[in-house]
Amino acid sequence: MAGILEAAKSAKRAEIAAARWEAETAGIDVNGFTVRTDRESQALITGAALAAFADPDYTCQWKTEAGFVSLDSVQIKAVAQAVRAHVQSCFDREAELLPLIEAATSPEELGGIAWGI
Image (cartoon, rainbow, N blue to C red; front, top):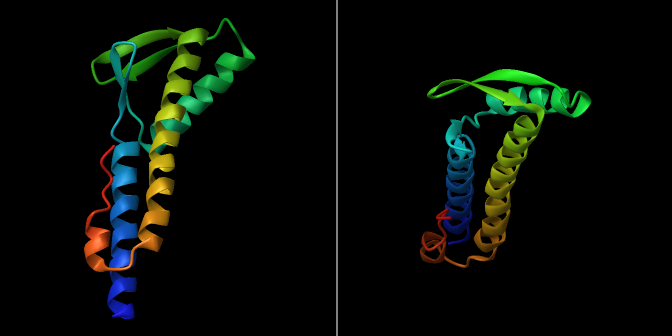
Protein backbone atom coordinates (compact mmCIF):
# COMPACT_ATOMS: atom_id res chain seq x y z
CA MET A 1 0.00 0.00 0.00
CA ALA A 2 2.86 2.41 0.82
CA GLY A 3 4.27 2.04 -2.70
CA ILE A 4 0.89 2.76 -4.26
CA LEU A 5 0.42 5.85 -2.09
CA GLU A 6 3.90 7.19 -2.87
CA ALA A 7 3.33 6.67 -6.61
CA ALA A 8 -0.02 8.46 -6.34
CA LYS A 9 1.62 11.35 -4.45
CA SER A 10 4.33 11.62 -7.09
CA ALA A 11 1.70 11.70 -9.83
CA LYS A 12 -0.31 14.34 -7.95
CA ARG A 13 2.80 16.53 -7.47
CA ALA A 14 3.46 16.30 -11.21
CA GLU A 15 -0.18 17.13 -11.97
CA ILE A 16 -0.08 20.21 -9.72
CA ALA A 17 3.26 21.37 -11.17
CA ALA A 18 1.85 21.05 -14.69
CA ALA A 19 -1.28 22.99 -13.70
CA ARG A 20 0.89 25.72 -12.15
CA TRP A 21 3.01 25.97 -15.29
CA GLU A 22 -0.10 26.15 -17.49
CA ALA A 23 -1.65 28.89 -15.35
CA GLU A 24 1.65 30.75 -15.04
CA THR A 25 2.25 30.86 -18.79
CA ALA A 26 -1.36 31.43 -19.91
CA GLY A 27 -1.05 35.23 -20.05
CA ILE A 28 -2.97 37.95 -18.22
CA ASP A 29 -4.95 41.05 -19.07
CA VAL A 30 -3.35 44.32 -17.98
CA ASN A 31 -5.00 47.67 -18.65
CA GLY A 32 -7.08 46.36 -21.53
CA PHE A 33 -4.53 44.24 -23.36
CA THR A 34 -3.26 40.71 -23.01
CA VAL A 35 0.30 40.24 -21.83
CA ARG A 36 2.04 36.95 -22.46
CA THR A 37 3.50 35.32 -19.38
CA ASP A 38 5.53 32.48 -20.88
CA ARG A 39 9.09 32.33 -19.57
CA GLU A 40 10.58 34.22 -22.53
CA SER A 41 8.02 37.02 -22.15
CA GLN A 42 8.70 37.22 -18.42
CA ALA A 43 12.38 37.79 -19.21
CA LEU A 44 11.58 40.47 -21.80
CA ILE A 45 9.24 42.23 -19.37
CA THR A 46 11.91 42.13 -16.68
CA GLY A 47 14.38 43.75 -19.07
CA ALA A 48 11.91 46.47 -20.03
CA ALA A 49 11.14 47.11 -16.35
CA LEU A 50 14.84 47.41 -15.56
CA ALA A 51 15.17 50.01 -18.31
CA ALA A 52 12.08 51.82 -16.98
CA PHE A 53 13.48 51.92 -13.45
CA ALA A 54 16.83 53.21 -14.73
CA ASP A 55 15.27 55.86 -16.96
CA PRO A 56 11.91 57.41 -15.99
CA ASP A 57 11.59 58.77 -19.56
CA TYR A 58 11.98 55.33 -21.15
CA THR A 59 9.26 54.22 -23.57
CA CYS A 60 8.92 51.21 -25.80
CA GLN A 61 6.67 49.53 -28.32
CA TRP A 62 5.31 46.34 -26.75
CA LYS A 63 3.82 43.65 -28.94
CA THR A 64 0.53 42.28 -27.64
CA GLU A 65 -1.91 39.76 -29.08
CA ALA A 66 -3.78 42.69 -30.66
CA GLY A 67 -0.69 44.46 -32.01
CA PHE A 68 1.80 46.99 -30.72
CA VAL A 69 1.12 49.40 -27.88
CA SER A 70 3.33 52.23 -26.75
CA LEU A 71 4.23 52.02 -23.07
CA ASP A 72 5.90 54.64 -20.92
CA SER A 73 8.01 53.79 -17.89
CA VAL A 74 5.05 53.92 -15.48
CA GLN A 75 3.03 51.56 -17.66
CA ILE A 76 5.98 49.21 -18.13
CA LYS A 77 6.46 48.99 -14.37
CA ALA A 78 2.74 48.34 -13.90
CA VAL A 79 2.86 45.50 -16.46
CA ALA A 80 5.95 44.02 -14.82
CA GLN A 81 4.35 44.20 -11.37
CA ALA A 82 1.14 42.60 -12.63
CA VAL A 83 3.04 39.78 -14.32
CA ARG A 84 5.19 39.24 -11.24
CA ALA A 85 2.09 39.12 -9.00
CA HIS A 86 0.43 36.63 -11.36
CA VAL A 87 3.47 34.36 -11.52
CA GLN A 88 3.95 34.49 -7.75
CA SER A 89 0.30 33.65 -7.12
CA CYS A 90 0.72 30.53 -9.25
CA PHE A 91 3.75 29.40 -7.25
CA ASP A 92 1.96 30.29 -3.99
CA ARG A 93 -0.94 28.03 -4.98
CA GLU A 94 1.41 25.15 -5.75
CA ALA A 95 3.12 25.71 -2.38
CA GLU A 96 -0.29 25.55 -0.63
CA LEU A 97 -1.14 22.23 -2.25
CA LEU A 98 2.13 20.36 -1.73
CA PRO A 99 1.69 19.94 2.06
CA LEU A 100 -1.81 18.58 1.44
CA ILE A 101 -0.35 16.02 -0.93
CA GLU A 102 2.28 15.01 1.61
CA ALA A 103 -0.32 14.73 4.38
CA ALA A 104 -2.70 12.56 2.33
CA THR A 105 -3.10 9.05 3.67
CA SER A 106 -4.82 7.43 0.67
CA PRO A 107 -5.04 7.73 -3.11
CA GLU A 108 -8.71 8.67 -2.66
CA GLU A 109 -7.73 11.59 -0.45
CA LEU A 110 -5.27 12.73 -3.13
CA GLY A 111 -8.14 12.73 -5.61
CA GLY A 112 -9.72 15.61 -3.71
CA ILE A 113 -6.67 17.83 -4.14
CA ALA A 114 -6.98 20.00 -7.24
CA TRP A 115 -5.40 23.14 -8.70
CA GLY A 116 -8.65 25.12 -9.02
CA ILE A 117 -7.94 28.74 -8.14
